[in-house]
Length: 282
Image 1 (cartoon, helix red, strand yellow):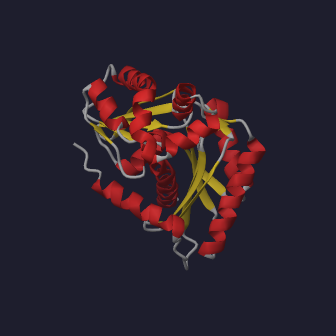
Image 2 (cartoon, helix red, strand yellow; image 1 turned 120 degrees about the horizontal axis):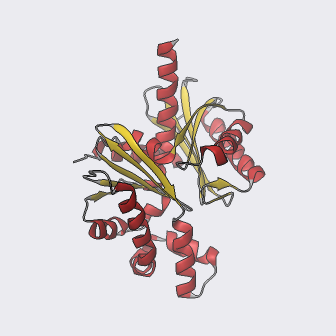
């Protein structure tokens, strides 16, 4: 059974840097840029893999895992980078990005181009749940990234990736159901859903959509022995979603602290690992 204590400590440290970035005296920094359906997140770690900065902004530039507003995405990414460079006192150069599993031919180039438009050098492109597992470090289990538009699942056996899929169900669908049930606009439903004070009310309303996510997970795991599931992604912030999925699937489900930031942090860790491997092979 996975012990997510280390992951939680790393995530707690990352969140502290949102309001208190750590000025650095080195250019050995590695970035992770995550273009999500609801938020764009830029994380920065140092040469030891410790978080030094994190910035994010609400965005409506991605739909169902695909970039639909390229200029808007570039503008937000550039602003996040500029703001972090100012507080860190150094230029951000090395970056990695991630995309939903199975979208390499559709959108991998667009996400990479957004990052490169800011002046950063993109060294690697990961799939989102696999990047998340660089934080979680499960050896045998399924990492489920429930984002705004899609649910991505990476299954690991003995530390090796054996299955990676993505389906079009996520937080956007939760918001649509909530908007209909409460007769409110989609944007109001988005804001209502994110407020933890409303989660006890929201979960029963969106339960059928949570069940759809559960069915996606069940289908991905049907030919595998999956001892546990780890939820990440912004939609996993919904309180109680882990218990609902666990009861439906009858498989232990874990959720780390700040699940929205697991994948962005994992992308930065992947950037560092990729560059270290490249250096060792040089």
